[in-house]
Length: 379
Image 1: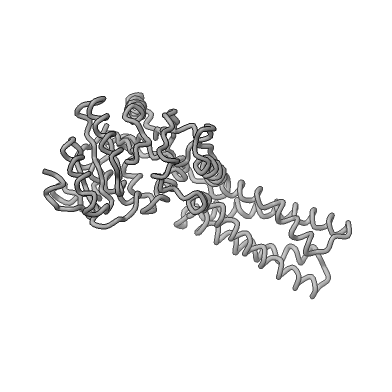
Image 2: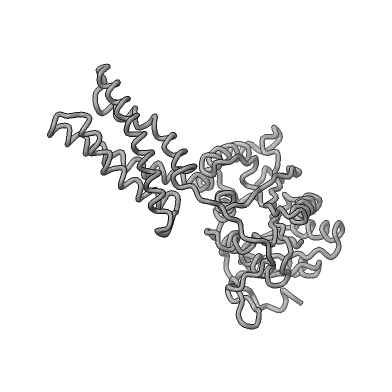
């Protein structure tokens, strides 16, 4: 395996980690990506190079996701076929845990079952900083709602990645913190398995070194659910306006419900397919449309039953509409995510993880992120 560490304005903890790795596993390649830390940190990276790390650098800060892609691209070219273990530069990952995750990754590949190994902390431990506990709980709830599987530590940067998975890793979106979340949100959807390995929980100065922003980044994790809510709200507004207009014009409740729902459902299908669940191409369009139509018919029947019952009990049409749509929102999201727009995961065959699209005719990376040519970084 190799160890990949993205670093932005690192402190002494990074150098301590490199020394511990060199002592625990001599000769293990370490790739360090300086994400535009600036001249003030040249001494840190020069010392890291002396300690044996290969130091790559961005001229300006581009974000953790961009730094990880730079390191992965280098790893695929310089160490083809090797697993990559990503770790953070702030000292929250110990050398022992990095090696445990790496051993688990290599062992899984040896068994013919390459998986992403996630080093997970006990984030609910009472002694952890309150900011971290609250943020992690909110992030876990948002992640489970969006990804449809539970993960105990959604912010872990300690991950073991088999070589066959690296080309897929380069295709994921995002340049900053959201990149790691996008990888987790999409890995099982795209056919990759994950396993958790418990690791030590290490915080310094109340976790002041963390770049995780509880509110903003939790919203990013839950973006699929937020987009679904926005799509549903827009469709609900269209449905409600059409229902009121048609009911006022005809006085017939059931036909008005049916007509307004057909129009709003068509808009909702298009938005959910392209924006929420990011389905592209024409291949599965018919199958998804049939599934969506079946779901819409079932929800329509439920809608009619609830609306008829609530209005018969004396509730106004607008309150009845709000109550009914609220009750059906979660059900609709779960069925669309798990059935209507579900993907057929197909993991690529096991082969050396060198992506030809990244290489020119001489085998040199052509899509490497901006890398410094300062000879002091690689003496």
